[in-house]
Length: 399
Image (cartoon, rainbow, N blue to C red):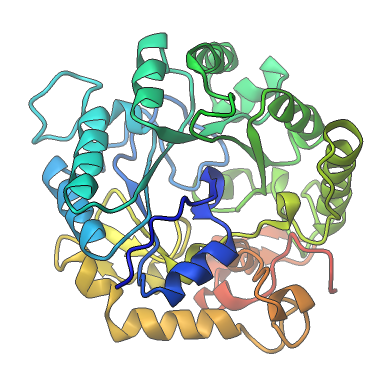
């Protein structure tokens, strides 16, 4: 395996990397490019759209031993991006961790850095966070460890943000966390990249342009994702996204207008020029399926964070991550994924972006949309795992 030391152009909100970089690494023999670890399902918030159904009372989590075993497999396979997620990873406290509360994530970050350094291998460390519990001390430790961040921010309106968080006063804590991050240097040209992660629902739809503008003005990378009707979002489906119902849900026409507005803001105000061709900022589509996996807090490995159990690749509590990645099941999955159903709008035979390997839409949104009935709302019993390869309801390109 050719261990390239070329710096990765990192986009923390989309499994780390652009498709051209994934293709380059695959050509060099890197079988697994990025690994997401949901170290804990526990969270300080209870967001109404949370795909992981995170909440303060959740107990599923990886042990420190399991997390370190995953890291060792990552080193052996030349993984370039190690991503810690939750829940809220900063409150992870596994049963086999005897250190101080709030220190487990920092211990794992150090372990990742030292493990890759021993083999003289490059690595990019990423953490998703809701920002609210990031103190100045935590912010300093994160930037000193060169951790790239993907940070929650759905609205600058406190009432709206609190409503989405499921907790009053959460918005103020988030903005204080951002202030702490900026004071230590995040947003500066020599700092690790920081993305704001904005989930688009009918509730905050009109607020997204201001969040986007705020992010750009602080030199953060805005990552705007039309919501997945997954996890807790199923209970609030009437405020989410569907390709089958006009009602109060968002549809592809709404998403088109939003991304055209974001492209306009970028061009006129920030000199960043792109045409809204797909529901991804700067048309930088998700790259997870090309070379990444997600390890859930229960040990189940899936192709992306919201993939249904039907497409699970294995369980780290039964076999090693390496064995799963090199299994025929993963190879077959990626072959199917890359072809998609010929009859869908995301098929490379119908969409030039797909044919040019620039976008395959979002597989999770396609799966989730199968639960909607035309003009009748959402019915989880109708969810079809085969729809994982259907058309992305957020895309407006093809009817």
